[in-house]
Image (cartoon, rainbow, N blue to C red; front, side, top):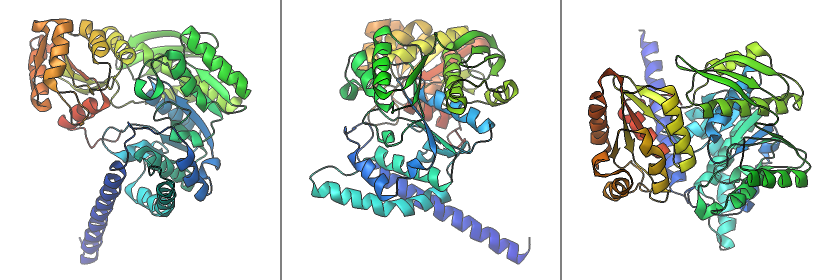
Length: 465
């Protein structure tokens, strides 16, 4: 290499290090704010920030998604199909596995450090104004989630994108993302979660989530409990929005286990789609795909225009959902999943039974202490041969001994082993799985942090989700 080339390489390396340092500095400062788990029911602060920025969220079209389970997977599916049509896409999801930058993607790729910092430099002065105004009024400053939402919506305008596919963080009506008006509102299955913020009644939760339905929008919903459907229908009627429901207007016609995933047949709003090779496991992912297809049909052709079969096959063929029923190691097979409520855990247990033939399956769990621990363990217990209990890296993680006591009461003394340290717990789970021979497996689950930690332990922490 010439001296000039060496200097250029050294300069580029130094710039990359400085970019990483600044990204870490900014993301650390953001994460030191009020956490997304402590939501404040108001849109005032984030709406004010967007107003100061010129309302960038109004410069592109939006598909908005809420629900209890399947939001991130469905969001990724919608974005992937739209990208295949040639549209430039933005995608906003939460929470992240390894880096906050994963939450904001453009054309399917996480926002670069350089782009993130450029948007931050544009946005930061206006966030400071909103913080100061809030403080003067005796209110808390912008939260972490509000700030990252503003950054994401601004980044999409800066790119610019044609359409943003936006997943709510919590609920819907008061979620920071609700400053964006969705042309299509998508509701994945609604169940009990985040009771402290959303209530413990399904109808109350459905009402909060239906708050993303905007005047004149199209509404696309997964199959729901009858009383939940009634709440959605009422909200849609009030907004003059048309509703399509899975199982009535569209749905899964067939799904068969295939190597690396499943072969799916769908009935869309405007056409039928056969022989879609979906490289994801579980009927719930086929149902997520049906929901995503209906959402895209609603967006592109107002529900009256079918998607091209080859276009859809190409989009479906490389879909991925990191941290969701993801195989991260072989021999023994290790699967990670972010299930964190009983509804999601039941779907996971069914998918494991349907998609894998383990002679011995070892569960590895670490769960947040504010979750329905008994419900989670009761749903998982019948699917595993033994349960290893540990803790993840989140301060919200339940103490292993306390979690172990609950697990033993539900599943029996002989079914449960407590290992406080997650790396050691993973090693033990793998050893126990090996007792099943070459067909043993490990399922690590209980929260997205557990899935992320196991991915990191197995060398996947730097892989692009």
